[in-house]
Each structure stands twice: as structure tokens, then as C-alpha cells.
Image (cartoon, rainbow, N blue to C red; front, side):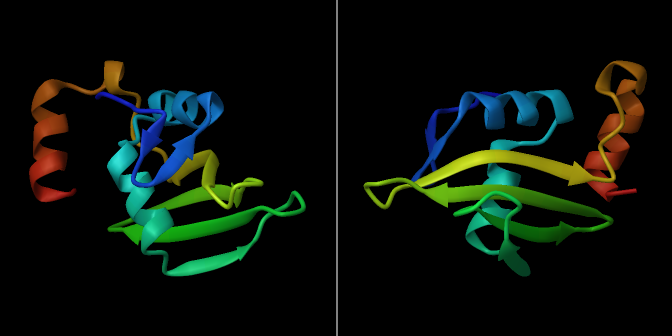
Length: 102
């Protein structure tokens, strides 16, 4: 997967991109959760917001805030339950899960 610092009219921190990579989460899925949340709430840190969206049995959470230029900055993101560790899952199962979502 190719990750970008500027994606979907938002700035993605190195930390957020590291979390995407570590969790096997696509930047597009995280952006969809941010752009079209089913839930939103104030984050744990002052000035931050949490955006959540479900994709099947998985819920993606994105933490973001606006900077001094009113640009959105994605600080972190995760998926719960996490995707299985890619190195431990056989290719056929990855494809089956991708196609059928089970």
C-alpha cells in the first residue's frame, strides 16, 4: 500500500501513517471513517476529535484536529478488532476475506 502525507484534503502525521502500516489499515478506509463518520466525539486531548465508522465487523477510529491554518491533521487511527497479522495468514484466506468479508 502506498501512503501519502497529504491525502483526502488532510495532512497525515508520521505517527498516523505508522499506525496504518502497523495495523494493515488502508489510508482510504481511514479517510472514509474521517470524512463520513457514523459517530464523532471530542478526543482525549484538547482540540482533538474522534471519528468512527463501521465496515462490517470492524470499526475504524480516526483522531484528528485542525491546525492554525484550519487544515485537518490526522493524528492517529486504528481498527477494532484488528486485522489478522498479515504474515501469519495464508494468501488464500486473505483473498477469501477480501472478497467475501468473512
